[in-house]
Length: 185
Image (tube, rainbow, N blue to C red; front, side, top):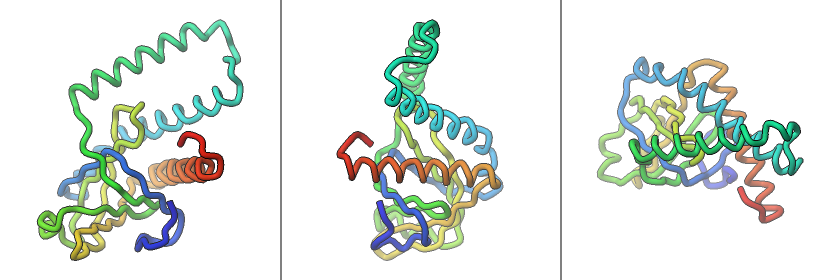
């Protein structure tokens, strides 16, 4: 959760185990994910706000809308299941995330094929309730002998960088609350 022992840039660093995969990609090819990322960030924020609202006020503010909300939630859950069946999630990996960098461990045999200054497309499934991943582009900063890869994120503008930082902050806040109170993350 913190950046002790991490060589990521200064600032907020969180460590999570999430479905994650990556592949070689030219920087120009990474631009296509910007519109999808915007939708995913909005879904992530909406899911988190809905959870906070429910926890704070155990009843909906408009009771007449409760049946419609329940049906919409059911449709979204079914849609998520269909999408996940058609596109299985990648394996979970332990990933360290910061506002500007991302790091993870790869097999040493694979590490030979990753070189500094290479661009990678990074696909992160941040929430099981959201069937779409965030797709980021990063430039490899370092590859350690043990297979630890560190990339510098190449955000698609200030709006995407802000959305990423807000998501990181919310996750950090949730982890701190969990560690203090032992509640769900």
